[in-house]
Amino acid sequence: MPKRPKRSSRKTQDAASKAAVPHFDANVFLTSAGAGRSTKNYRARKTILRQGDAANAVFYVRAGGVRLTAISRQGKQAVVALLKAGDFFGEAALTGQRFYLTSAVASSDCAIARIELDTMIGVLRDEPKLAEMFLAFLLVRNVKIESDLIDQLFNSSEKRLARVLLHLANFGQGDKLQAVIPRISQDVLAATVGTTRPRINLFMNKFRKLGFIEYDSGKFDGGLHVHSSLLNVIIND
Image (cartoon, rainbow, N blue to C red):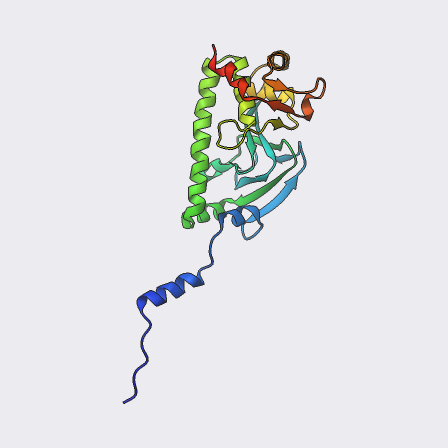
């Protein structure tokens, strides 16, 4: 009597089924174009989205820097956040917010990924790796927002400026101190700190004389160097 062919085990079938499912790579998803997502390069000072635009996508900074700003009805402008590669923005669209509350402007030449709202919701639901990455970003963003609020309520303009400069230099984020900050103007720093340009100029000159920062006179927009000694401004009353 001929032998019946052996049936494949459940484990073998499950393994084959898993092998048939393409591996999800969060980095590839966020840095390439595809269904429900696109990529675009922006030159410095170009607008990526405007305050009041329909909130229908989430954005990811692939390279370069982005500045988030808000303008009041009276025309007063404030810098809400300074973003770098690896950051998201426009994420409030996921909460059902109909319009963006801030504008996004390239602070340097940058590459941006745009993920349609439905696509982003689906991938957060189905792909744990991307969901974990996104959650980590939100937690860091939340801590920074709380720190910024405390800073604004209790610290002087001088301390707030020192803190912004250290943040821009990636101080205390686990990486080597990024000493050079390219192309950031005193006007942008004033809008970020919440003070006037003359006061920013006063503090920057003071920091330079004390050896906390370095930049060429008249060439501030070209870049500057920040030293860890700037922490003394925050630590000392």
